Amino acid sequence: MPPAPPALSEDDIARLIAQLRAAAAGVGGIDFPEGALNELATLLVQVCGAKFDGGNRVQVLGDGGAVSATAVLVTVSAMMKASNLEIFELGMWQSWSGTR
Image (cartoon, rainbow, N blue to C red; front, side, top):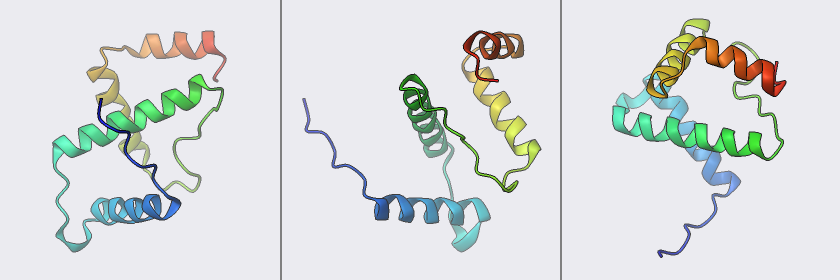
């Protein structure tokens, strides 16, 4: 088994966020390959799921409307399709889990 990678420091995370922000804004000609986007989204979902399982109800998007409703719907729709989930299942899960 390979050794575990070193933990990310707050500075590492801040640099990653700055790079992703630049990519989202199209600054500096940064190309964000679809495969990298898929892997990053998968990892973020896994982190959010682990936090939820640990009792932490993560607020995934920050306040302030930095993300449009269209962007949220496009992303959530793609994630649900990739996971073979229907909107009915989301509503049922929210009702049963008390997350509403």
